[in-house]
Image (cartoon, rainbow, N blue to C red):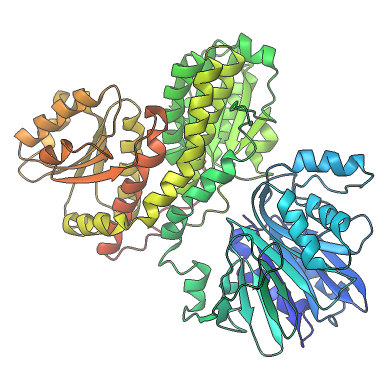
Length: 610
Ligand code: M6R
C-alpha cells in the first residue's frame, strides 16, 4: 500500500505535493519521492525513510513548477532505497510515473522490455510502467498510458507525466484507490481524499480502467479507447480525521474492510497459471525442504494464532510434525532442534522482542529460520535465513486484523509449497485448492459489502454488557476462537476464554449459567458433528449460543440463539472467513461500550521490550 499525489494548476506545486504526502503517510513510509516539471525538464527528489527525510532535502528542489507527482512507499518489490523509491523514469528521461499496488506480470514485461534494450534502474515492479509508456508513446500520453494498462496484470493505480506535454497528467486504476479533486484553476489526483482535503472537497471517484486526463483547467475521463465517460462530481463532508480513515469511524474498521485487498496482495504472483504455488526468498533449496523432519513455529499474540492455523495446514498437506509455542516461552526452553528443523517466526511488525529472541535461539541451535512478516527491512528480515512477506499494508489499529488474515494466507501458501516440493499432494488437488484460494478475496469482499455488518452490530449491542464470554471451537476452528476472544479482550476489556470444545467438560463448563454467552465456531469441517454435541451441552446449561457457521447450514439456526453465516470454503481456508465476524463482533461490543478501539489501554502496536 503506497500513497500517490498529483497536482496540475496555477500554484507552485512542490509544497502542495509534500503536504499531500504527509496526509498519506499512514499508507506507507519507507521511502518517498517527488517529480515536477520545470521549464520542460524533470526535477526529481528521492529519499529513504519516512517523510521527515524528504522534508530535509525538499529545498533542493525549486518551488516553481505547476505540475508534478509524488509518492510515499510501502515496499513490496525491492528494499527501501533511493533507486526503488518512486517516481520512476523511463530510459529517455521523458516520462515519470508513480504507482500504488502490484504489477503481477512485471517479470515477464521487464524481460520483454530488457530484450528490446530498455534499461532498468530499480528492482521494483512499478518501473515497467515508465518503460511501457515510453514504448507506446506516439505523441499522446493518454493513449500510451492506456496501451501500458492493457499489457499489465494485477491491481494498481498509476499516474504518469511527461516532459513532452508538461501541462498534463494521466492516471488509471484497477482495484486500488484513485480520487480526483477539482479546484479553481487547479486539479488534484490522489490515493485518498485526505491528500487534498484542505484544498478542495469537490471530488470524482473514477472506476477501474478509466483513463483520467488532468490539466490545470480540465479533467477528462475516457475508456481505454478514448470514448468520453461522464462522471458526476460530489462534495465530501468528512473532516480530516475521518478522511484519513477513508470515511470509516476507526482505523480498525477500515482495516477490517481492507482485508480482501490484503489477501489479494499477499496472493499476487504466488500462484502460477497452472495452479502451483511459487514462493521466492524463503532461503530454502528444494533439497533442504525434502530433508526437513520438523517445523517449529514461534510467534506472539495474534501472530501465534495465525501460526496455529499453519500447524494444521503444514501437518495435513506437507506431512511435517509441527511444534508451536509462544515466543516468550520458547526463548527460555531447551528445545530439541536439529539441522533438519525449520523454524518459522511469524511477526507482523518484525520487531517483537520475544519473537526475535526465539529466532536467535533457533538459529544458534542449527535451525534454518524463516520469517513471515509485513514489514520490509524490519529486524526479523535481517536475522532470518529467508522471508515470506505478507502484503497487508500499514496497520494502524493496535488490534491486528488485516495482518492476521494475510499471515494465515501466507502460512497456508507456505504449507502448500512445502507439500508440493516434498511430493505429498497430487497436482490436481493443489490446483483445486489454489483455485479456491483465489476466490477467497472476492468472497470476503462480497461478505463485507453484503449488509451483514448490521446483523453483527445488532447482536453485539445486545450482548455488550455481558461480563464474560466463552469461545469454543475444534480443530482449525480453535485458533479462530482464540483470535476472536483476544480481539474481544483487547478492545472491550471483557474477560473471555477460548477453549477446545472437547475440553469444556473438563473444567470450563462450570463457568456457564443461565444466559452465559458462548461463541462457537461451527463452520463445516470434519469435526462439525462433534461440535454440535458441544453446543447441545452448553444449551442444556441454559447458555446462549452465538454460532459462526457456513452458509447453507439451516439446521444450526434451530440450535444457536444467533448465527453469523460466512461463505462456505475448504476447511483449511475457513479461518480466513470465520475470523471476520468475530473481529466485527468484538469491534461492535467495544464501540457499544464507548471504548477507544484503535488505542486500547495498556497496549502498544509493537512490543519491542521483553
Ligand atoms: O508484530 P507482531 O506480530 O510480532 O506482534 C505480536 C503481538 O504483539 C500482536 O499480535 C498483538 O497480540 C496484537 N495486539 C493483537 O491484536
